[in-house]
Length: 237
View: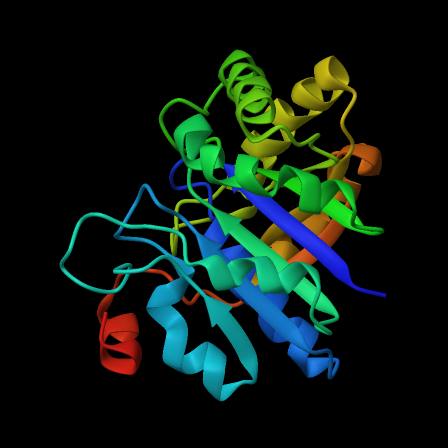
């Protein structure tokens, strides 16, 4: 059965990073996978930047026309509709930040309604402006739901400071996401970080008796979108 994920959230929440990891992990399980970069807002951090790597690993990629050029205007190619009816087992939508980015989802509302298995995941990074507090996240989450016409089914704690992230960084996100979950009645499905940080955070769970209901699955990722010298030498950006 086709499994579809829609990742939404604020600018800099880490949607593209998680989307890429979801896609590559699905391919490791030998699932036919397609990643849809639906970001028509931010031209600088997008999963389409890793087009070559994704395609080399067997991930089909759809992205806005002109997304990887110097042309600022972008438009959604009509072939994106094909992901709702083709034989891919895993479909991942990486959506532009905030309500403005979620507008692009509205045109596919009927298609999403017809899916048997759909997860709409709101990604939280409390280290970013406009999503650092409980109130800001609840307001943004509700605005995105209204604009996209989709119901968010799960929350992801991806609180990070890029390569400076520690277990304590994730803990700050935990404190916020608990309250967001209680207010919205949306479950926390995942806590995301690199392997080393997840291992440190797992130890912190026992040490501080954290409530695992608000942690969800501990999901280890590899960073592909970070901007540093190692990334430049490997990927060229």
